[in-house]
Image 1 (spheres, rainbow, N blue to C red):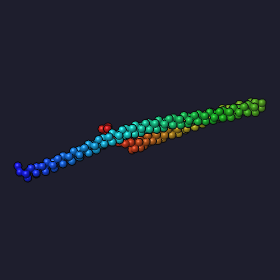
Image 2: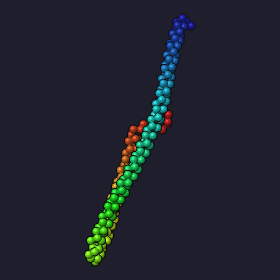
Image 3: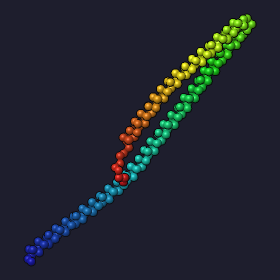
Image 4: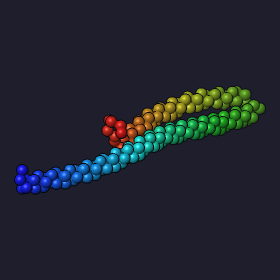
Length: 178
């Protein structure tokens, strides 16, 4: 082998060594970048799981509070209705009793036949009043049933829209959990 061949071989050997060093440096950089990406991915995945759990808890708490509020409102509504009925019935009963007393006072000494007619009129009035009250309660019941149906439909729409809203703002994760 000639000096020229040796020089050429040395030059090729140096080039190969330089390339090898460059590839080793590049590999080290890629490994560092890969580790940094793995660490970053792990951190982001952990934060995502924490946020998903927080969102789930918030959704559950919101639904629970919504249900509790509805229950409280239903209770208060029933409470008010019951008290209104008691007030209306007691007021009517009081007026009816006062009318009976007046009929007895006015007609007891004068004309018993007239008193009996007035008491009969009062019985007829009470009968008509009961029919009127029953009819009114049936109408109210029908109205409340319509209201309940509408409220149920509204609650269903609310739940659907709320689920869609939460789905829209809940981060999507690929099927392979990290």
